Length: 437
Image (cartoon, rainbow, N blue to C red; front, side, top):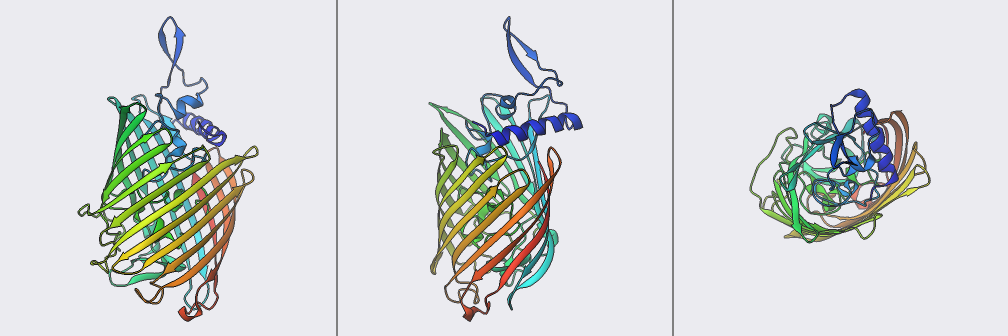
């Protein structure tokens, strides 16, 4: 079942594709006329059902609405809006594209803060086609983040990865790699309503946690990364992953083998290594408005600066999405994760995200987080419980059916022990966003 928002955007995308001649698709629609199949001319209206489910299936991995697929192989609610310009080729390929660019000015207060202007975002492309009795799919996602510099941008209470191969990043968010995903998948029916799939990426995303933060509807309008990133979704760029899964109706079970080492400070390359870590996830969408998951992973040597240390992580999350009024929507994320350092402490993290879009122009968003951190006073320098609250808004101006220009801002408040030297800081960002798709 597709949502009203998705139907409207798909119709707009189809009209844009036709008017700009992005491709020369020839869509076919069956008519009961003496048993003949008649080609549908380009000037005829395009069926939304044909766009969403042109071959009796939808999405590359299973028999469910395309809106359910999120980052990697993760699920979001079926009722989630789905951005993208879509078209079909004469040879039967479905193509979709999407892009987001944020120009941000970031100011983090206090003695541990800083200021910086930077560009962040992503460009995504997807293709799928029937292959024998199954379906093959390809995804690519690139980011301009490396151009902001190896040390990323100031973000109080954030930790993880390294800028120079010698020191960990603290109170900064690392830039994502140029290549965020280059993946392929194949799925086919297993009978009795079951569908199996294989997914591989270099890089890709293993079967752990909720969708990555920039893909969650409740989070995607905020340009800042969560401080819980390295509890829930730091594995979303993994240089080497293979996932096998089985889905039926609203259930899915999957397992991954992947390279545990996080990306290094060289953000433009493709890294390789043994698939030395494992993950497993159970996903359940009980209604079109909910997406639930429980997952576990054992990560071998995730940190380059501590190659002898491993981690085990457990994650639970619930994502919610629904339409409100004629053009609005509401979405939320509630998630918990536990990181067991081997050897070391067990550290927990909580996350709540919410977004309300009362109309086509305004979106209000918020994020509340609590993390048990042991890196803010130096690597493994003692566990401290820290909290952060961010509130923001963005106003979008629609330039065309598939292009929007947004103007936004957010403010953040922090709760951290004074002994760490934060001195009750506040932070904020002002940003301009270009969204295509």
